Image (tube, rainbow, N blue to C red; front, top):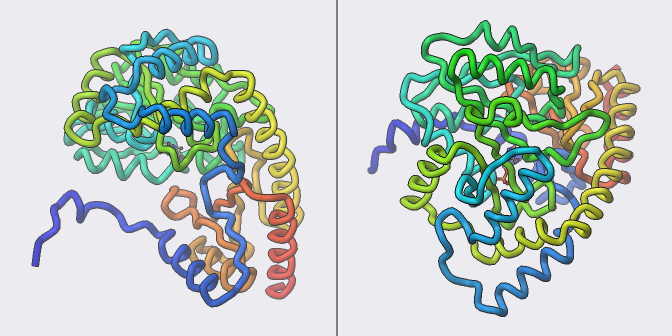
Length: 387
Ligand code: PLP
């Protein structure tokens, strides 16, 4: 028998697995489970993007590309950073990865040493602490609270800085909270980073999915201290194409490229040409984003109102496509609450356990309005039965 590495053994088994496998079991048994747990747009990839991929295949763009991505795409991303984010990243300060996830993974391995500490606002996306821990660094959660819409307090963040702190991870709009950090908060966080010489890794995957708030890139306040990570998955409904990217200080990008050159090499060539169309055919892409945003907003308004009316307290998120509902009315333990919701209401949700969100579950509203209405009806039925 082979012994697994300490690294492999250190990975925390996901507590969502139990709920996910139970959901699959129920589905296989013919139960009509509604999934509110997936983190991907329910829209198809836009036509102009698909057409560009088909054209790329037919014209033989099917070979290795430079590790950091085709030059046209890096130029388009450089222009996008300028146009949409006010960031100055020359094409050689940009890298293309196999999904936003790989950009984050490369960034952590390029920047962290064992023993370093990394500040991460909680609730957080599960992969941040896991990836950070894989490098041997320590994730340090900075709590935020549902009562004020999970806003980040820069003073609470700074209070956790120690001589070992190396990095701040930000995710705004955030998964799972939907919180969008306003410009004054981001400016204050940038000042903390500059005061203590910390690197900021900002994950802006959900930048286009913002409702009533203003989305600003923290890199505009501390360009030398910021690596901006983004990707095609959520904005252009391209989760399966696996295109992410990052822009930042050249030395950091070069280290990320070196890591990638010894692991996965370039992101899929066909996907790169598809993403290129998403950036270059700006008008079609803007139209697509506008259509999606309008639908998400209607769904958000409906699900937030519906959950609160049921007594499942849910703050109104300002961005992304998730809500966090307080399920202590159903069960004080969120794992148990998620299990009850699945077994008795046939709705799959994600317990907050792995996000550091006790007493709450996450529902994704990247699904049809009909599904949302049916989920609210089922939850109502469940609560009445248990009353
Ligand atoms: N960052 C956040 C906050 C996410 O929610 C996700 C996907 O769920 C990712 C990154 C990963 O995106 P990608 O599909 O580009 O790897």
